[in-house]
Image (cartoon, rainbow, N blue to C red; front, side, top):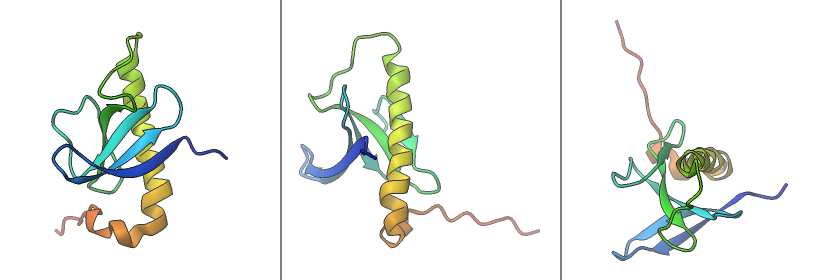
Length: 110
């Protein structure tokens, strides 16, 4: 089965190495992986059971949005799909690498 996303690393404008997810199909939305929500992101979606988020970061052509109706709804849906894909195709395949980001929930004692 053909993958609908790919991941890559790239330096941002501040010189920090960032981890991105790119949608292979048009409109080629880009998500950036972060610890916690990026405040200015148009859309953010948590990676289930981890303190990681996929935040909308424009598209491959830059920081632009499609002008058609329901574009924001589509972006939210794609960010959710990216977070789910990232969990199954990257995190769970190499759990040791992501263990430090795991949400360790303790049950209340009574």
